[in-house]
Image (cartoon, rainbow, N blue to C red; front, side, top):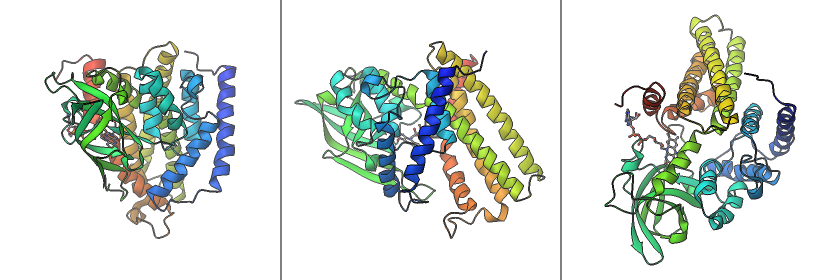
Amino acid sequence: MDLTLAAEDAAFAEQVRSWLVENLELEATQRPGRFASIEEEVAWGRRWQARMAADRMVAIYWPEAVGGRGATPVEVALYNMEYARAGAPQPVNRVGINLAGPTLLACGSEAQQARWLPSILDASEIWCQLFSEPDAGSDLAALRTSAERVDGGWLVTGQKVWTSYAQFSKWGIALVRTDPEARKHAGISYMVIDMEADGIEIRPLRQITGEAEFNEVFLDDVFVPDDLIVGELHNGWAVANTTLAHERGTNFPFKEQVVHEVYLDELARLAAERCVLDDPLVADGLADAFVQLRLLRLQNWRTLSALGRGEEPGPESSVVKLTWSDMTQHLSALALAILGDEAPLWPAPTGESAAGTWQRQWLWSKSASIAGGTSEVQRTIIGERILGMPRG
Ligand SMILES: Cc1cc2nc3c(=O)[nH]c(=O)nc-3n(C[C@H](O)[C@H](O)[C@H](O)COP(=O)(O)OP(=O)(O)OC[C@H]3O[C@@H](n4cnc5c(N)ncnc54)[C@H](O)[C@@H]3O)c2cc1C
């Protein structure tokens, strides 16, 4: 395999790098060191994403005609690596860019694409994902939120949970049972729900980090007009699979690889500063992370070659998800070991110390093995679909 970048790809990476340096510097003048609230962070995130959209620096793999750059898989990988290396904040409308947008491009009508894609790009309308329910997470098709046919549309009733950013969203992509008589995976429709419609109640859920980023969403006879159904009626499971394929798609592995390489460098520096590099726990922890990251990098190059050949991402994405979630938890725990006695001092009095940052990261890392498909489920996919083991 030849891993040398073509001249045009190297030039593209350079273009992204210099755009990020210039624009992050401009934004830094208006950004507080630490956001006082999630509302403040979202308001800033909208502005940052609008800046990216104005220069076509967001959703670059979307076609040019709808505001993207029609980027190749190699360009997307390079973009994500540069983005992570620059320490740029995640776009605030992640669900819109990574899940709703690609699903609308693949399965939505022209009218739906024209209506929603521009406001996804510049974050003037934020989106959320209304998939999980109290009794339907890993087993998503067990969902019970249902819809009753009325003149011109549907009345939706039920409950969703863990809905990130619902409180800031204008639209939600939802899976709803429209034919209760059909078997489990059939009879589900994929709807876009207006989060400001009558009958919606959003209750924030406080996480162990102290923030309330996700929510319970209650729907009581929420009217959804027919033209807000994406794809065919009762065929929502197929549409949902498009969304789920993008959830661990091509954006994610390259970005996470670099994010964790940066973490590892920071930890090695921190360990040296605190003179704990000789501690066997720290030394082994750093070496393990280094090896894991090299393996992840090789896995990513393999994925990239497959994408370059025009192949779709397959079950290998579960290996990346599993490696990433183990890695993020391992590095966060290692950070606390390096910080030693200082580690529990959180929130730090000044709000800016190394302990404050890593303690939050350690708490947040707990969600990595749950969000976007749990580690147990990833292991089952790897066992059955890559290793060919019998179905459990
Ligand atoms: C930070 C975060 C953000 C999220 N944001 C969203 C969002 O915006 N929108 C949304 O719709 N959802 C969101 N989720 C929900 C997420 O998709 C679910 O938590 C996840 O799919 C797991 O479902 P569950 O929580 O119902 O757990 P369950 O499915 O009830 O699982 C409970 C436990 O049982 C294990 N288990 C379940 N089935 C199997 C099996 N077949 N074999 C082996 N073990 C099994 C699981 O691994 C887990 O340990 C978010 C979750 C997190 C943590």
